[in-house]
Length: 273
Ligand code: KIV
Image (cartoon, helix red, strand yellow):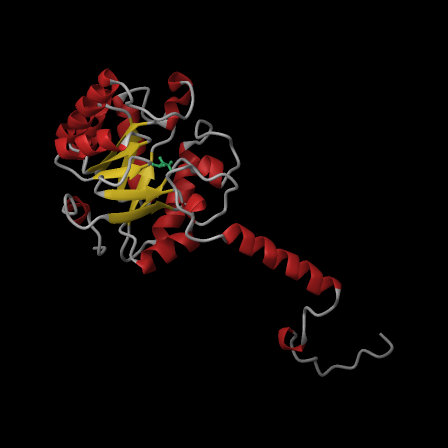
């Protein structure tokens, strides 16, 4: 069993706050596992961060399964791996959603995440009954960007805030072990956190959630534009560009490879060949 289990994660409610990230490949997953990150989400944000799409909409089950398997190999000892169910892998009907959730677990995920409020309760119940832990996701749900009219802060009006709390309670009752609140005003996220029995995960929902989550590429400085709610903890993009530049210069001026990068000459005679 890993150090972090779904049961242990649930116990963080109201206690020491947890830091979680997205991860998409073996190398970063292994670093997260070694650093003590309790949970990584193999987010469908990989459509943008890894595949270069402009939204999560084109991401397929096959894309997700490929990346989940790699992350699961990296998070072998400690970190929980959550597979994000991509657009149209669970919206058509319950049977298809349940089967696709199962494929994610078979690929190596410890749990799945799906977007949506009370309307997802039947699928969440079916997954939990089948032994699949589920993470909810309400507030800004990027797979519905075309209905929402853009990537905007949600639950800003009285009725929208009340609806968000009702959805959060429905997810809680249906059996999620935690839920993401994305782009929600901090006072509303605080009210949701008080209204549910499971930890809430803030993605741009302020400091009063039980858990914070950031997209790996944003917090490490891979991306040019950083959302307001992200702090950049490193400037890896600049570091990588500087390393590429130095490599180009050293190959051009002949200083790479040096003798320390070169094997000993072979004792053969090639004169006249
Ligand atoms: O895909 C993703 O990375 C997400 C998080 C931002 C919650 O859904």
